[in-house]
Image 1 (spheres, rainbow, N blue to C red):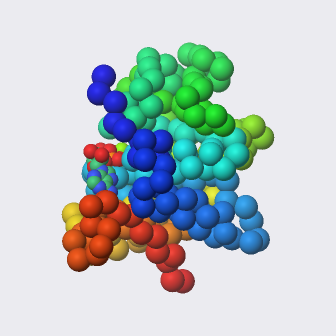
Image 2 (cartoon, helix red, strand yellow):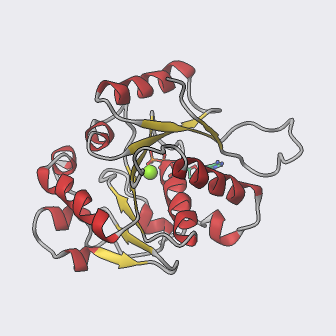
Length: 228
Ligand SMILES: Nc1ncnc2c1ncn2[C@@H]1O[C@H](COP(=O)(O)OP(=O)(O)OP(=O)(O)O)[C@@H](O)[C@H]1O
Ligand SMILES: [Mg+2]
């Protein structure tokens, strides 16, 4: 299995790792009224960087001393087990269809404070599974054990999963690969989330073309808070 490198672990002092720490701070300060504990990461289309951002965000939150769990809710293009080099024999889908206990579904990672639930056995009905009452209750129950629950999802324009999950989490982050996606497509993704009253915490601009900038050798992520 090919392991994708985690930049926040391999290059903690790089500009990109610093961007992830800035993202962490922005999320932590995104609301004074209600604490944001459960976060969905999605994007309009495929390969915009959702799983990469999810994984690195979870790492920097865990490094900050918060007990964090990362859940792979992308049953179609599951990726987190590859990034963390863990088994995906049992995971979320197996837990939700009652085959296994939570203790069998959750795995520790090498990073202190960070646990992971991989996607599990590919189900025939992913959308129904993630929209189920059991899933909703599961996320609620996790809040008793974990400070932060970070959820990776499929693209919002392609399938309904991210929209469905967004209705029962505290907030969602919209990843926009700015060099890859048309403005209208990104707006469409935002509208789909707003349609279900999802709370969009902000947009992460990923894969930005920063050739003109002095730090061009790094790939760069930026954060934009959505204007009301
Ligand atoms: N800022 C970036 N600069 C360059 N490459 C990136 C960046 N972010 C992610 N990538 C690369 O883009 C590819 C897709 O990333 P990733 O799997 O995280 O996207 P995704 O949105 O989760 O995709 P999918 O829709 O398949 O779930 C990976 O090879 C990843 O390493
Ligand atoms: Mg992904």
